[in-house]
Image (cartoon, rainbow, N blue to C red; front, side, top):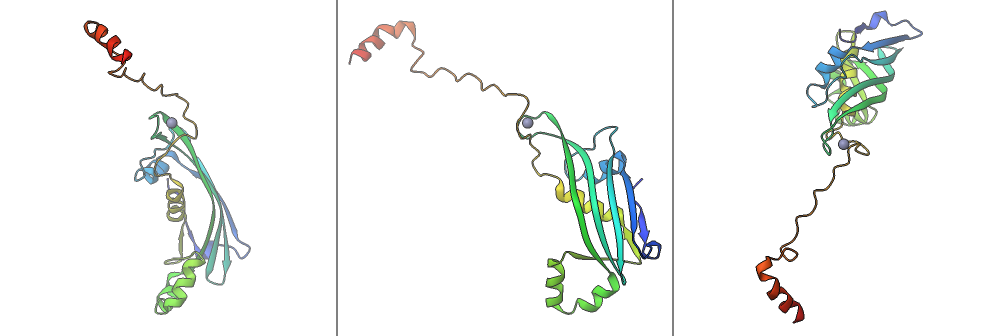
Amino acid sequence: MAPPVILFDRIPDDGLQQELVLEEAWLTEVLAETGLMAVPGVAGSASVRLDKDGRNVFLSGRFEAPAQADCVACLERMTLSLGADLVLHLEPAAGKSVKATHEEVELSRDELDVDVYTDDRIDLAHWLREAILLEAPLHPRHEVCPVKLEMPAAPPSARDVIDPRLAPLARFIKKE
Ligand SMILES: [Zn+2]
């Protein structure tokens, strides 16, 4: 099951705290587009707080999402712990269409990390998905790969391998 949609009217004046389980099936779906995978049998978690300011919503908290991937360096399966703090200012979408005509306002909104919610619905699955995808590494790699890839012994260079039949000649060359 995906994280829930919170209706604006369900947020009490003193805020709403949600402790969520990020189920393996949902993480699998979210991570599908990244090349990462959920860890079989392991769920993630999110602690989300919603506070109202007029019709605006301040979303804060943190998520932890275990994932696994094949290390790009050693190709061994590795486990990653994706996690980050959540900080999001949400305005009702209606407010956006009014302000969208003012480009300067739009710019400052981006800087403030303001986004919108529509139809009084705060879709936690949507925001958590975005946050998780932001944390997903493009090229997952161990800090230190556990398997030491032995460099294959350098093939002996032609200089070192001398056809026995030419050995006398080689000695001759060395003397030169
Ligand atoms: Zn590795």
